[in-house]
Length: 70
Length: 161
Length: 210
Image 1 (tube, chains in turn yellow, purple, brown):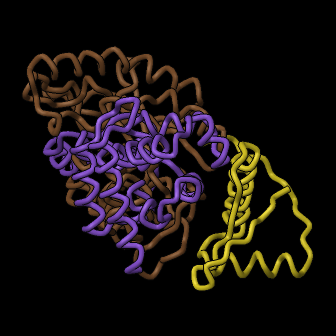
Image 2: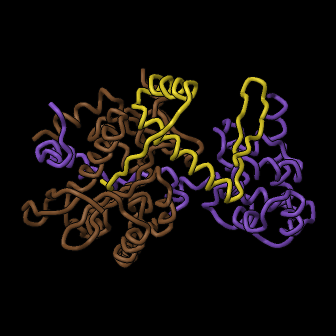
């Protein structure tokens, strides 16, 4: 496996709470949650740079709202 | 017992799995198999029909490929791919745009494009259409009839919801 | 790239030979894979045509091209694994860890390792109709085992998902113990399979103990 570097994160209480909640919900360590978030963020950005768009769709209301990722 | 990756897989266990591996012609896995190459002809049915349908509907409206691309706001390369390439995999937006420009029911067109499970009436109409259509420049009377029959089924099944 | 020593079996002699199971393949490695495999693919196709073998019996990944997948590896979520023996790539697998989520059972919605692609080198294919006996075996099984390992390492408890080509459905169901979950219209109607955390335990315990 690739060598890893250590980083210290400063998070607010609210951010920490969300991290805890996601960690619990997804049954992942906090590190794993952040790793997933980074992978997802990269993947979304690459596809948007390619010209694709990311949507959420409400199947009940049959509505689509565009999500813009910066 | 903890599993230590550096020890590698257990040979006996692998040999048991390998028996099943051997019993298969191929053990390839690939969700985007269409991207990389060919699946047997029997599996490429939907896309061939879809491409042919788009081509016919376009010619019926006397549109060139460029004009269709422009009106549908779809890349020219995508239209060419759809019409010529059996393995083209159009996305939802493209199919929707084409349906609008070509006056075809979008939900049924999604089914023909393989983006939704086709109803039986659509599947059998698609087969009949495929059998009767041939790629020549002008829509012959036969081709016009074949197209109209197919579109009729798409519209009728749309009305039923 | 890092990796571990493994063994695969020679079909002609039955001997177990040393090989490497590598992870962290880079884009250029996939280009090399295809350079090594392309000639053999063409040969197989020619032999199949000459022998008049029906299309349904052709290996369904015959026309694959791994160099087209090389750009995928710039994504953090993608990993390339491969088996090397005799300085040649004998099998390759591409997985993704952030785009797919379990549909099965109580872990529904939780991340899993998705096997994007898995293929064995064409000279390892067994095609009796054209007299091909295949050089090595156990490679696919080894790569699948690695996917389960990766899932465990990621904290996904061994969960794996994949879409099988029709010819390989019984390997994933019976050989790997996965559950078929229906055909996916968005993936050429391929059958989607999942390995739950409970099913993965068998691979992790029986498949990997010292």
